[in-house]
Image 1: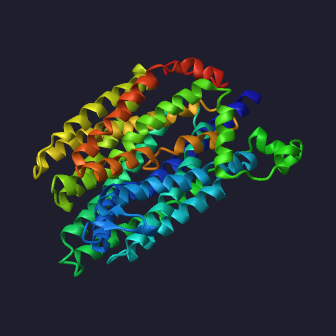
Image 2: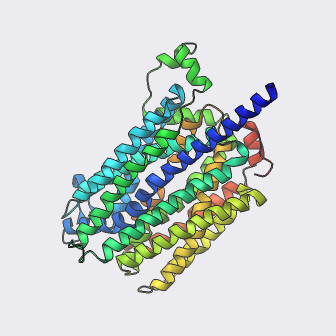
Length: 461
């Protein structure tokens, strides 16, 4: 009788965990349309064109009196967004771990980002400053929300399931991005048939991403559960009075405190450093590819949308395939292989001839096959390196370079273009991120890092 009761409870727990995992997947489904339709496809070229409308005779705009080449404004805006993220994410991460209440914070961040994205409908004429402001708010909110979302992974999936669960989450996101891009492409190509201008079609596509983000966020909010960590319980019961009474530190101080704590886990910090570098390159390629295609290669917007759609479809396949490879060869080796593929693909992109969409599609196929898997496996591998009870705090540092939140890559891209006037030079400069990231990751003994973090070591890692 007792045994039967235990089995029933175990089955119920497993069913509950699977239900929560399915809800977790849907946040990727909700927010990935922002990363795809807004950040990757439409906003870069459109905001650049808006900035050019406001530019002087020499091609410069002057936000706050600072001369900025119009073609660099989008990249600089992405870079600025990480400053906001650095101030906000460590505070939110520490609060989430201290209170155990991640879900209300996730809801707030998600709906701030969705609202800012929806407001991009009003970006027209020469309102480049409005576009930059909305981009900074949406990107920072996306970063905060993704940090909280990612921090659920160690709680909803045991170690042996994390690579697969993380890969499925990314696959959901890329499937969602593909679906929305098909709708966007139909509207953009047939905008005359719908009685709207090209500019209005782009603005509708931007706003629809925000509405989609907000609507589907309801699913994970209904299914995810907050859990009290030992730290949260101690704070709530008053046993940790110093923590409870300590005023909230400014973002940089909280981040410094998190990094100091990571120094007690130097191998976790070593992995994070490698990730910050190579993912900086990944995110910059994602956010600047459409600008490169339109400005340097002279490709039509419809071609760029089709190429990004190809990336989304192949990224679903790539994420699931690399998840299977990780079960055989381990996550670390699979990620290293993806970094080699990134380097080769990016170097090939430098030599793409202008006005040749076929070769741009070939390049997009290469990116798609490695994009989802490299991101999903990095997330799941890092989840093994986080000390229990500090998931949100550690993922706040992790998230600072995720999904277009890196600052150094866009800054390097923008500065290279500003100094040389060549997007080819700007794109090839990003190869350094993959080479350095590979070298640093190869040196991290991940089994020892997982053990030192106080977590069980999977059989294959």
